[in-house]
Amino acid sequence: MPNAPRLDVVSVSCAFAGRAVVRDVSLTVAPGEVMCLLGPSGCGKTTTLRLIAGIERLSAGAIRVDGRTLADESLHLPPEARGVGLIFQDFALFPHLSVAQNVAFGLAGTRAEKAARVAELLRRVDLKGYDDKAPHMLSGGEQQRVALARALAPRPGVMLMDEPFSGLDNRLRDGIRDETLELLKEEGTAVVLVTHEPEEAMRMADQIALMRDGRIVQQGAPYNIYNAPCDRDAAAFFSDINVITGTVNGALTDTAFGQFLAPGHPDGTEVEIIFRPQHVKIDFDRGGRGPNPTPMDGTPARGVVQRARFMGHESLVEFRMDFNQQVLKATVPGVFLPKPGMPLWLTVRRDRCFVFAR
Image 1 (cartoon, helix red, strand yellow):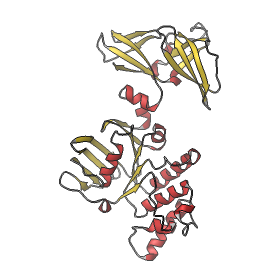
Image 2 (cartoon, helix red, strand yellow; image 1 turned 30 degrees about the horizontal axis):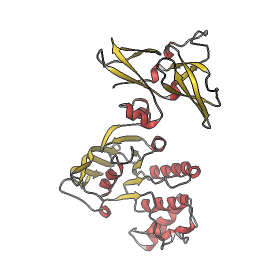
Image 3 (cartoon, helix red, strand yellow; image 1 turned 90 degrees about the vertical axis):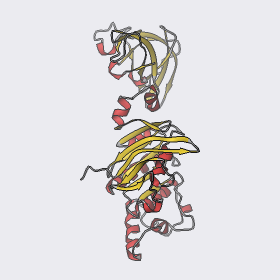
């Protein structure tokens, strides 16, 4: 069954001293797939990872790898019996062992078989010739690659990674992440990656499980999670947001930017209309009176520039709006630095707005 899950986490819960920290979490991860557990500190990401690893005991649910039960309410296999690889933030290399000895640690087989596997992995992580070096002689990126090779050496079906790139220099991080992802996919390993960085999750994940207060509040492909958030907090986790409010009347909400559709919300409901700064457009035709107004953008509203900053590949401009003195943010590609006090007209992309009950 090519589409059968490698890892199956079924309604798992865990409590410490009577306090629930993981609540009814379910995940399926296929061979070669990357699942990111994403969320703020304290939301249950790392505890979920430790439950899969066998470091913590679940109080309800079940965990299976390739159909074999690793844990349920009556069974708890120890970490070494699970066939699961682990990579943590600090890499946890043995300082008294060489690179080759670190990679070979825990490998079964003859000396020749171990040596062949170590040589293969060091070549694949671009560390050929580093066999006899000590960990302290390596850069952070090289240590990360040794940790990856060591975790992959026994050919685990599942790899668990707890913020493994957080200690790397920003210039190295993207390259190391891409190399790691390529190798894990080549090995057909199911990966569960814990991160609190949305950009990392978007870059690496096939599926994202967004966690809050011990629960998964939304799960899906990065594109879907970003473009169809389940609530205001989910939208705000991935980027800055702007929020305006209104009241539903006939499935529509009147605002200074015109009417917004609010399907599914009964009349009289107070709603929040959420949109990201990149979906605010500056209307240089002075209030939409140019030759080609766009109906999708709705009614222009006037704001006064408060400040503008160049962010490297775009400019961030903050406006104080005339209609309620609210500050809204807009991002503009390239360099656009209008002076404070300059009035400009703004419109909002209708197809990029989210409407939630307050």
